[in-house]
Image (cartoon, rainbow, N blue to C red):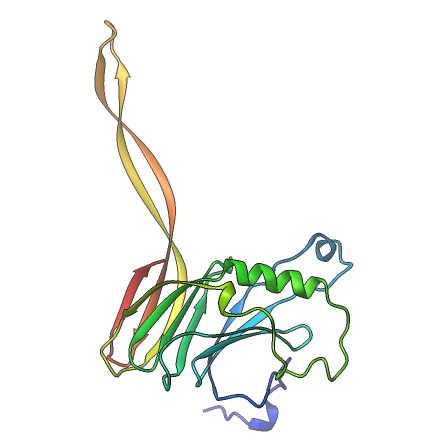
Amino acid sequence: TPEISETALPPPRANISAALPAAECAAWLPTRRTENEHRGTGLPHTFLFVGHADGHVRAWDVKDGRLALDFFAGHKRGESVVSIAIDPSGARLVTGDSVGRVRLWDARSAVDEMHRASNGLRSMSTRDRDPTLKTRIGRDDVECLGYWQAHAIGTCVNAAHFFELEETEEEEEDEEGEEGGLETTDKKRRDRKVVEMFVTAGEDRRAHLWSA
């Protein structure tokens, strides 16, 4: 049996810490590249979303360690945000709490503002990187689209994840007959559409699939 030595583990590529309540969960927002970044003249900004024990969601710019977003997720006081997920486009955000409830958020405006703020920033001093500083992007930039009891009351929503599901719909096509009438044929047209969904898994030993 191979042995794993703690001293052999590689160091983290980045370390974000602050004098804040416990970090319960995290989700990675894929990089959105600007024209300059595609040309190699700039560095992309990637954001790490973190759910905290005080019910807040905070997002950090991994490039410079700056706090980019901070809002109270509204899971009532005393309940931690224990699971978080964001779709690849940054349009939808899901938070789950410690008593089985889930919130679905429209985060498009907040993410756009985060990218605009990051692309306008120059290199910061050590004091400016202080993660405890407040950010102007917050609750007014996200919209709650739904709030419901997703899992058994009093159980944690342990995980959440977005994914896309492709659905195919088949429809019969009509062809014009010899005398101008319509005849139904065996030909079928297949329409494909992509539906965005997310899954949550709870301490109640259940997993649920939801439409985003």
